[in-house]
Image (cartoon, rainbow, N blue to C red; front, side, top):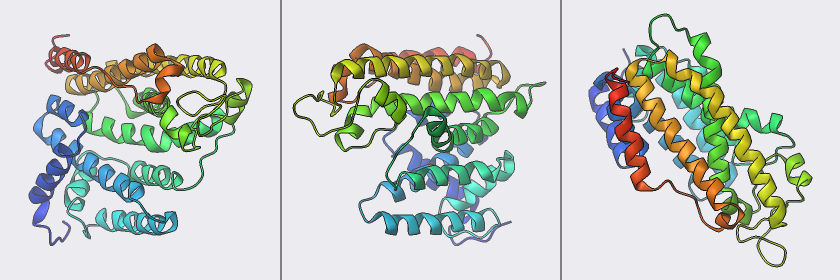
Amino acid sequence: MGHSSFGGTAKSYRYCHHVTTTAGSSFPLAFRLLPAARRRAMDALYAFLRVTDDLADAPGDPAVKRGELARWRAALGDALAGRYSHPVHPALHDAVRRYDIPPQYLSDVLDGVESDLSPVRFATFADLHPYCYRVASAVGLACVRVWGLRPGATWADAEGPAVDAGIAFQLTNVLRDLGEDAARGRVYLPEDELARFGVTPGAGGTGHSPGGLCHPAGVGDLLRLQVGRARGLYRRAAGLDRLLTDPGRAIFRVMRGTYEALLDEVERRGPAGLAGRARVPRRRKGLIFLGAWPVRWGLW
């Protein structure tokens, strides 16, 4: 057992739950679809990711933040060896052991977050794919360990569709944030595809869409390509549903349904919508969540 000045594992789980419920995200609501122990493990994962993101997103010199992330990475290694230096650590360590979560997944996430501190450039989709894996698929692979597989399914079976789901989710996030990012000169899309449609990031003005992208006609074609790619990934990810436990199927359906609804909004708004951030209407989110409960109890 690890040694801690944070009051033990139970107190750490309570801390993680507080982080989760006060983060302002709607996804922790879906954790209620899981049994209590698995729900607590999701709180621990989410809290670890929240602290990680906050270190990277805080204002300041990227070099300083890179140093803070390096210390946080070292602290993760210590925590998984039972030496805790943060209130998240006892619960995270317990969840990793209880559900046999490969620590490499957590390390991959740290790699992805750290890469955002440098200028972002992806020559091709083959270059973008590893980034999406690190910041999204690795998270999903850890979550699947917590959600659990139904009898007869293997982790090898689940890995491919779980990775595809993460790539689809992150690509959807990229499209949601495309206008905001482009206005700051950051475009998380392959440069060869930008060039194919004559699209370049800018700061607005003549020849620019409201979202800061040059050549609005090309932006429409670019969006259609990316939306189509994301939909193909969602179709491949759908195979994960039959591999998961019923509670796991339920939470996956909420995640997948919400992100696909977000992609629908991006597509509906088109290039003109890049001036603001697409959001899933509250009513649709509610229907997705309610529809997951029969799945949770094996009724669907």
